[in-house]
Image (cartoon, rainbow, N blue to C red; front, side, top):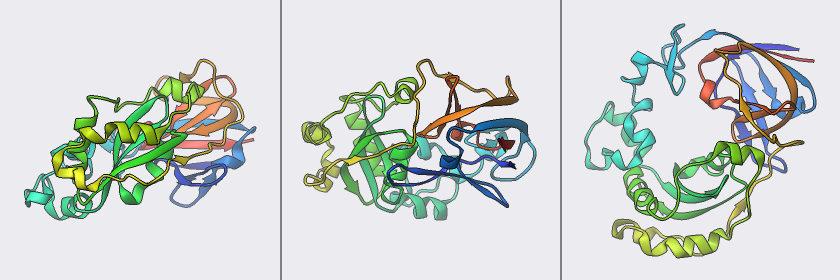
Length: 264
């Protein structure tokens, strides 16, 4: 079977195991059904996820012009502490910023390569944890806007990482952690503005990824250097496809690439 379209991050459905889907304009793939099958990926061209033009992708699936113009790529997306909609201050598009920033956000701990702190909208749980390849996670605070979540994350970054080691995550070289104990230990460092939103009775969430074989020495597939690749799919974790020869393909970092995918 052959599929062609613009890559966007895989959509997920939590379950045992998690179900993964690649969505194209006129078709979709349940990626779990490709496990143990030969899959080829052929790079065709770029297409900006915003303007739809065949322009080289700069970041986050957007061309250079769109990345520096649209609100979906503003600095507060990556750095939530830069959010200003709660003050009525516009960055690029106040209506969009109010819609996204002025809704419940969660600061969480996730164990993907080691314990890390992160921020997401409440509606993105557990999707955000799945995308990061976390096999366990727990909420610390639930606040009414993105700014409060951002300053809480900044405060906690002094005591726990905010990064994921993608190689360790993919190798599944991870030890179980008591995230309830971690949450309780970090409570004292929550900023005063967010202290009342601390969550003290919730339990950690455990996630199961569809992986038959983890890579021993993961090597990342670069579509510009290797525009055609073929291999046996052995797993899906985070936003990565894992192949039998230890090649791994990060779907999310290749958003905006038009590809042809063939399944044998």
